Length: 413
Image 1 (cartoon, rainbow, N blue to C red):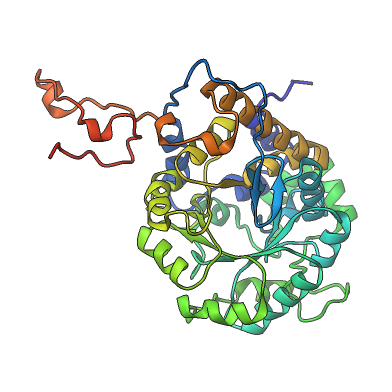
Image 2: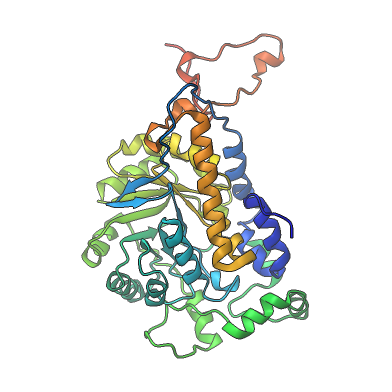
């Protein structure tokens, strides 16, 4: 068997072992998938600058956040419908996160009951991601159940007033319930191991959107109706006060890309921010998360922690985000690729791989702790200006030297 050495290796293996419509659901983005590519391109365009002859004998890549110690500066992001990849996916991912000693964030659109995830990972740091649909009683019920199951933080996703146009899914006829076209049946038949697991585990259900808490099977029509419910478009910043009455733990707002929204989050009492473009699955014209991060970190000014997701595939990507102001990052697709390849063990292997890469990158930079990272470690690419192309070199202003290209250049005063 080919050795899997990095996240891309796991991705390629996942593409082989999953039916195409399932892989494309996990892997794809909105519309032309420019935002999806932009996340990776922006990270890859940022070189790192090492500081040599630094004492790194006592390396520690862990962080502390909300009175919890994380073994590595990342958490497993919320992933809806992960049960299509493997039965009990949410419980398996939570167990992998527990073993890696990093948090796991359960999606509102998960396929495993909140209580069952806690049972599967009794010692894990669990957070609950929340979508607020038009029927707010659903959100209230989810929050109550998460609190009763000792989930520690609530992550309100705010960048989905309407679902993104995911054309890969539409081309496959991807629906919940699935439309078993002849092409879909043939594709599934070519993946017998996946099909056997599906037959044993049954079609995934939206376990935490149901009006009751029992395990009774739910019809395909009921699930389709749950999925088709629109998000609550009356939700505003003032709505955070409504959530505060339901939840007294840390409350994070996920899906911000602008500095002014970050200031609003602080003013309205958020305990944290997740800079995110939903993994390129919503607004295809959105900026890369790493490009939006520095301005948001500056706007927040350390008053609340800033996290980031979008495009993380290497430990060096984690380090770049930390250097530009993130306290931690979220990783979604990478552990799901691992899950597709080898279940819980595969997901854990991916998390361990990212932790190892993060430690190696920090050691090479001369940073023994995450708090030692800063913008000085990130260099900006120097594209040729029009003047340079015309033979007249233009000197880089001192005010931007050593900063990434996402900082606008300023002329000397």
